[in-house]
Length: 240
Image (tube, rainbow, N blue to C red):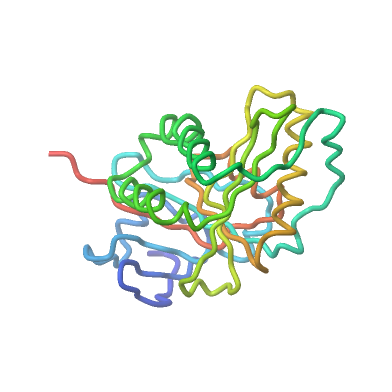
């Protein structure tokens, strides 16, 4: 490799390196990294000099070999504050009526807005992790909905991370959705409502994992004060 990477640490299921520049990343570059077959995930710390650009990180690997995801982090104090003005549109922040309603909307909107359109990026390992989350993680998470005249038009789920993340205390945004059919003015109001809720209901730091191909989601987190902190790769199952 022309530019050196440095091994930071090896964990049970992943290996973490420093990365001089995200511009280096490609199939060929990853092929040359010492990435033991027993480690499911290859992780790079995102270059600090590039993290503050405010631009999404485009997918840089082929669909044949790898899947690329980004970890976004934010200090809740840096999440933009703004007047939501939701009442004039009939938009209000409301808790879910019960866990069943939360689960129903999380599953339905995740399938429609993520699992189905991004199915080519979902590996068996990711699907197994998602199944485990909906079974054991979601019941412990807290969620909020935005309703328009009583009907749910947006939602956000926040999960408390207990494992050592390097950013304690920490919450994780596991899902965020807003009805794409709403006018832009109303969507801006919804985003302001959700950001305000995040500031008031999260721990000091907030994280999120986003597939690199999901530029729309990356842009939302960037506009909400988040910045990339890590970039990770998983291998696709080889087809025989």
